[in-house]
Length: 85
Image 1 (cartoon, rainbow, N blue to C red):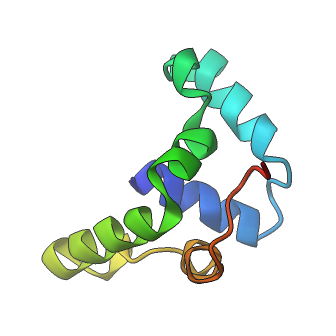
Image 2: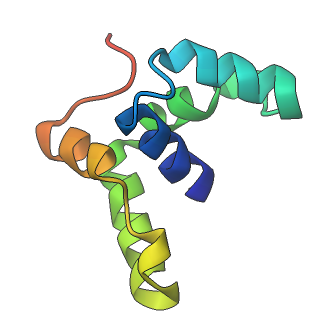
């Protein structure tokens, strides 16, 4: 979850613009399970509302550093996903 949160912050800051770049990087870079499609594809599968809910729980328990990135909150609120379709 925290890796996803930090990735969302990188997208917010314009460091990363293409979700596929992230997913390819995590698959080939450190062995994220390819059948899951990558970090952002997996987040879409789980649902961003669920991701935000979990991160809120972690933040309540472990501190503000784990609060969801605003991008995740906004996308969850709008029912959006990183990949369309």
